[in-house]
Amino acid sequence: MEALVGVLVFVVVLLASIALHEVGHMVPAKRFGVRVSQYMVGFGPTLWSRTKGETEYGVKAIPLGGFVRLIGMYPPAQAVGAREPRTWAQRLAADARAASAEEIRPGEDHRAFYRLSTPKKLVVMLGGPVMNLVIAVVLVLVAYVGIGLPTPGLTLSSVSECVVPADAPADRGCRPEDPAAPGAAAGLRPGDRVVSYDGAPVGSWDQLTGLIRGSGEQPVPVVVERAGDEVELTVTPVVAERPVVADDGTFVTDDDGEVVTRPVGFLGVSPQEETQRQSVGDALAFTAARTWDTVSVVSTLPGRVADLVETTVTGGERDPDSMVGVVGVGRFAGEIASLEDETLASRAAGLLSTLAMLNLALFVFNLIPLPPLDGGHVAAALWEGARRQVARVRGGTRPAPFDTARLVPLAYSVFLVLGAVGLLLVYADVVNPVSVL
Image (cartoon, rainbow, N blue to C red):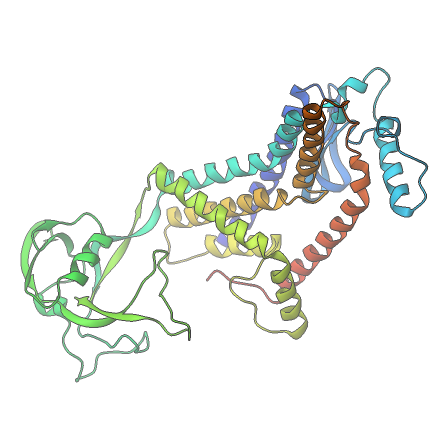
């Protein structure tokens, strides 16, 4: 049941993200006087629509995107001096110009999109992706600041009886030859909450582990809260080989893939996880880091697609970092919502973080400078603006609008490629899924 709820939440947020993305285009377009004839969520047959003012608002059958129809997206043939088409690409461009011109009512040429200045075009086309970025930031703030994240606290969840070698299996028990763990020898118990270590008040688990690792084999006073009372103990950490942990919580490995270890002070205690609210700064820093990670992923997209094709054809196991589609993210949402060992708050925070990452992906992906993506329109507007500025500096005549219809064949090609990749992702996510568990 929880998994179904997670998937439903994912679908609702996905549709809301699509709808708000298109609002990000529509609102500035209307503000700049462009007539918006349609605002649609989804593709394919129309399920419901209603006309308000000069815009038809509706929902279509396939909820995998949306669009707003801005009149005059392409400048007419006479504005760009287009010649009689001879090739199939020129005919596609000519058909696009003609269809765009038909949408312009008599006396409304001044309301066509192609008439906008370059800055206004950029605002309109960037409005959608920026809306996804805003959604991502809001979701992260709700998850991090409003709910909080599972964080190691100062209450001990377990106290080891012995010091197990760093390379031992995770389920290995104590053996007679294993030395006693200092924490248990000193009298620490599960449920104790550490108050101070070596005379220093302790405010976080990271601070405590740093003090333990740096204390060597010297006796150290430690104060814990037990059943409402403060208990003073003396612990003597041992120096043991333990894995080096990176900032993201993963183990550091060498060139051969082996976990790197180093000698540090060791007590043999583990913390309970507590839901702690994070600061706004931490939430924004997380969003910025994940945005950069997404940019890195998108920049290697061709290679990742090739790897996915190879894995799908050969039936090999997918890399945990493999790219996933809408079906895969929906599966993640269901898995996170059904985690039995997590609290409702932590599951909600995890689900919101996943949906935030989806919106960050939409933000970055839509900025790829290829039509029909928003980034393609941004690139065309920048090119047109650059040509005008060069002409202005040189004292020449204002150049004609950039003939964006010439990009239509490229847009169709990109659309077909993206459609094929989308179908491949759906297939891979169904028959060979990636799990977050």
